[in-house]
Image: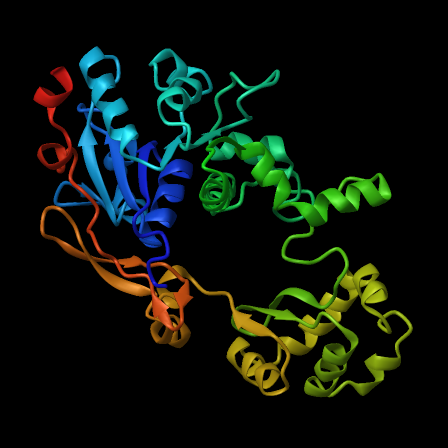
Length: 382
């Protein structure tokens, strides 16, 4: 079960993040993912720093367990080769602007005519149809369009995007989930399908708490920094030396907080007797708690709250969290060899099947590394 997609072949016509992330998720689960790239430069992520002896570690982080071939899809013979590759596959994943693959003769309808069982997944900014379908989009613009930037940051601050490209990666996750679901349908009926994954829709879908707040109240959710609109204390707090996160999301945990800070009278304070009331008065509550937290360093409070069973954590940098004991125990950070022989580190699949982590079977490919293995121009031309 550590390679549940073994035997499934995926042809990936993707660039940068959303599509390549989808392809890597499928590859991690055992699928044979063949990445089709332009001969001149390939996936533009290949040029993104950090560059280790000529090879992008950003590219490596999204393209392990894949093979690479180069085809110029404006060339008739190369399009024929692409079609030949697709004829051997179960899945196509592409993240071009809607209509591009159709103009190349590689759209869903053209492929379905020859391969009726194909699962064809298209990732785009706004979807394959509709008034915005021809608009381009990147993670930043989709975060802006989706409302995420309106609720990110401190109250009164300028619009801020989430530091992690949520729009790209949520679309990639939805795409991988949808592909696997569609493959189940193919196994049952033999009929393939076209999957339309809009980044805007995926980003709105993971904003379920915010959209439901609007539907339920008619009011737009507001920026709260690290705080929560319906829970308190539930945010980052300043201790004597630095910040830490603490989440007492119910009355039992609030009681434990009062015990740790040695303020039992807070349990009876009429402002703090329920999560709703604490959320309504969370600015006063934060100020009150931070006056107490200022007496000790963050690690002191983290230790005390952990002992009391209250969820809490340091506000880590990536260098800190990647060395955390839990990350080490789960073996999430693994050695990765680049095509140039340089050995680096990468964050592997976080998923285990029966205690086994999906292995890194193939290092990220050099551009066109598998042309000789996978392309046979003489056969296509014949």
